[in-house]
Amino acid sequence: MAGFIKRISKTAGHIPGEMIYVGEKKEGAVSVSLIDYDDKALSEKEISDVEELFPLKETPTVSWININGLRDTRLIEKLGGHFGIHSLTLEDIVNTAQRPKYEDFDSYIFVVLKMLMLDASGKGIVSEQVSLVLGANFVISFQEKKGDVFDAIRERIRQNKGRIRRAGPDYLAYSLLDAVVDNYFSILENTGEQIEEMEEKLLANPSPQTLRKIHDLKRGIIFLRKSVWPLREVAGSLERGESKLIKKSTVIFLRDLYDHTIQVIDTVETLRDMLSGTLDIYLSSVSNRMNEIMKVLTIFAAIFIPLTFLAGIYGMNFEFIPELKWRWGYFYALGLMAAVGFGLLIFFRRKKWL
Image (cartoon, rainbow, N blue to C red; front, side):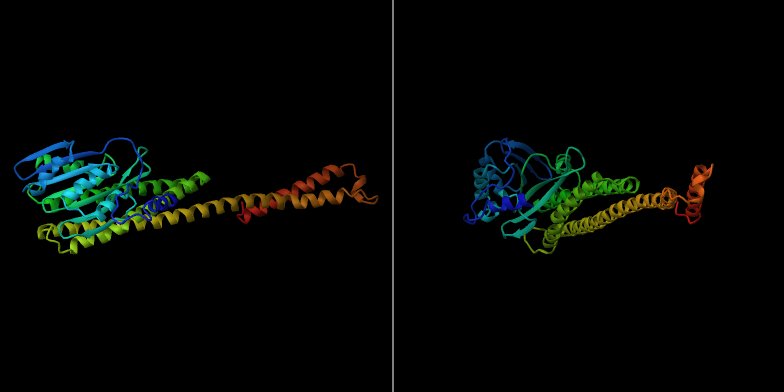
């Protein structure tokens, strides 16, 4: 949370619309790729000069411009200026601390959302901001780095599967959003498996390491909830919006996207409740374990208290203690102590305290 506030504070005091990159400083050049298509033809290539994209604004084909890396603010400003993207939108694109949102600027639609993926270990969650600009005949996607969940869409375009090549840029934008939301389900499934695995460990042998794992998962669920909840508003706005850029034939797909978003939110809330339950299980397990230990110690104390009492009596060494002069007095005292101890053990077992 402290890092998030620190990132936001970098933009404080600057002119509205001024492009200031807020995100991780990583090496490597910004890369731009283009997929230009219609139902009959396809062109795919890497772009070295952003001016190569300028003629696409007027072509009848659908152009998907994908930008990996947001550090080159001049490149993004130049591209945005030609495609008529507002300076406030460009400011939001390079600020990776944005909350998922939807904005309709008449000439284009701007959507921000969080793309979540598993890290190299397969346990943690890696977040990346994705910004989409939907225009009359183009979709521009901005990503923080290479690597995304859009490979299946690229293959569908290349192989001309489904309706994506026959549909317009609004369907392409829907497909990109749907790919991000569908990937949430794999993240949630992985998180659910981790919670179930942790519950088994809690019942078998709760430990401080398990408690740390609970807190790690809890932070992950909070992050998921923060990323998913605003997406409900985004999907609802797209479905209910009256933008001329979204065809009526695409609205039904956006309704399905909204349903998926609701399902993701319900799953997040379920996992959140499960995680709260695991914390209660941990506390109960630790408490029960402590009670078992205290019960054993109490039983030992209860057995040795009367033995200590007998030893104290015969250890007083008064002159007229009758057993003091007995030849078998020592063995008598030991036998009495043993009888009392075994008697208490039998009593505790009959009471089912052992």
